[in-house]
Image 1 (cartoon, rainbow, N blue to C red):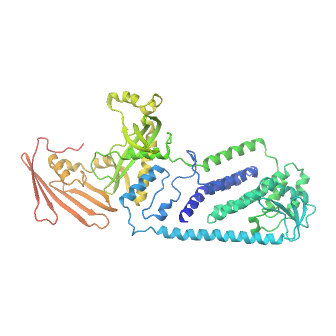
Image 2 (image 1 turned 90 degrees about the vertical axis):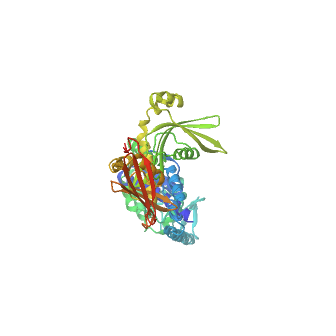
Image 3 (image 1 turned 180 degrees about the vertical axis):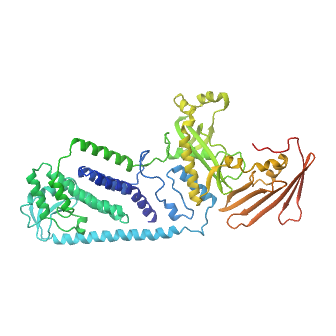
Length: 576
């Protein structure tokens, strides 16, 4: 039930943008025929009940604003960045890393369970009110007498209305005489427009989304627009005098709006004053107004009936199975650099695909990067330059699997390699891979943002190379042979001065490297949350002649480890 409520909540959020657009249109474009406004209300209703998969780059529905069922029910919070492949990779990475334990249950799980019960209770109350009002109305219609066809007269009602879905009937107060023709004409239009079907359906949708104030406003405005659309249809061929008589009929049949408006279509129950004004001042819409109406309707449909594109690129969109295989391949690439890595990110724009000899080739512009925490900053390590690549996939039992990635050779043979790798129609795009840098940057940043949001971090994001050039030149004072020995001995630590972090079984470990800038380097491994020290070693390095002497003393140990290394002439390490 909770999962269903989350789905309804998500649809309610996305449909709210369309409802707001229609409400704004009603205010700004009052000359638009109401039948077109009613059409937009129907589209809003569809948006409220159908989980759309249609995507558009011009969609005005913000991405990443919906609520995932996982964030309510799982122990490990889930993100929804609006890019499906990013969500799946980040969520999987966090689950595997053990970001939280079963003991730290998400309190939203409890809240959502309670809210789901309240939601169902609200539906039950609204359904009960509807049934009661219908039964009371049906009781008053017991003595209704047929007049002609589907028209009935009844002494117990004060306003005309249509009732019934499969066999709609028009019920008139017995006192109606002079207004008979106008009233019947209005109610017949309701039936021809199938308003007797759409209004009960609209109320059912309102029941599902009763918690959303915008849906209530939309329902009320829809009921008014339905009546106005019928009025426009009836009076469009009338003379000025006939319109006055029609307005008089509206006034004579007007009653206070009540809960009965939920089901029947009452002639004089909704917005009578506004309807009279519009009837008296009605003008047929010109061709220009109709053209503008069509254009506005098309824009609203395209912008609010579609979801934002799951890939913010101008490339080809693959099916989910193939897309996941491509992402798996890109994120599986090994990192040859040093330092702790916590998150792999990627971006890719697919230029085309080719299937041959049981191998599918995906021609793409790709970009990958690795990120890790260093000195409380989330820093990119390595090069994330956009690169043409051919990704080879195999298919087994209908599922694609990553096989390998082929990159072009650099140097003077680069262009020739591209021509050999890419089809002729894709060569120019591959050659100018820099054209896709902005799109790839958007995707990589989305990965990073999603991951940081996932773990609740507001860390500054940057490039490790930019950061370290201004902070770690002090390492140049030590012999390279000594540093290489220490890097091998303390391989969990970064090769630069500072504090790197690793996430191990859901616990964040800090590996800190510090120095006095002269002879001593300190390696300190501790838990970030508790500051509990797990290891601390003080390394002293000094040189004499062509030799370096290294002394490693671990905190709590009685004896230290000693190393003696022969030095080369260029023994001082110069970091570029």
